[in-house]
Image 1: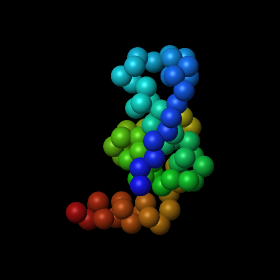
Image 2: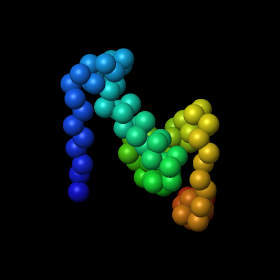
Image 3: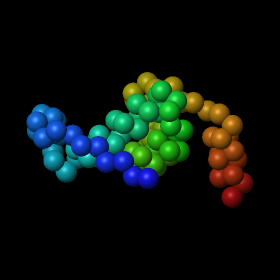
Image 4: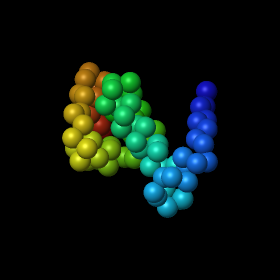
Length: 83
């Protein structure tokens, strides 16, 4: 399933960003918010944001969002370390 969010034109025009950055930045902000609320895992949030592990982790730090480190993240890190 894919979800398309309809943002009113007046809101899009009020966003103070270059047009080519609006969609990406909204996706990043949504990903950060959903991750912070524990709605999305780290991996899925960074996928939504379109960022790599390092980039998304760095952004969490810059925003002072506490990283949730659970069993799934431990498993992923272990797999990565062993590959």
